Image 1 (cartoon, rainbow, N blue to C red):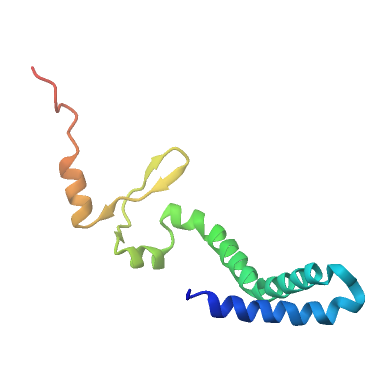
Image 2 (cartoon, rainbow, N blue to C red):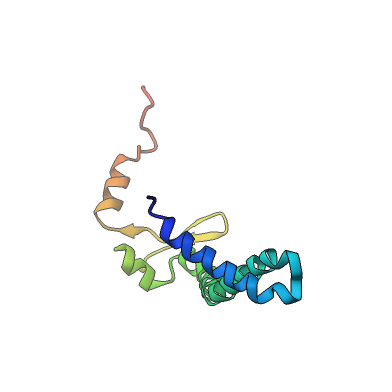
Length: 120
């Protein structure tokens, strides 16, 4: 016996009962109407979740430019990055501050200097 046997049996009984209720209105297509009614009920039950997801995406889209510029201190704190208040480098049209910390030092130590690789 499958794991899904009991849930599908209950779903079948629910759809059969709904089809019996809808038969005076829809006749032979009462089963199809019951499936459509059931689908609409499920979608209505999930609608609040979809609204909250859309609201969260809208807030994330509003905060994305601030996060990209490094102006949001709470996001920097969550990532464990400290930002110094020194000069800001410009790359394209976005301002990027130099991070300070062990990973930044390691990244700078691996970057070759201006004369690296040139044999003289």
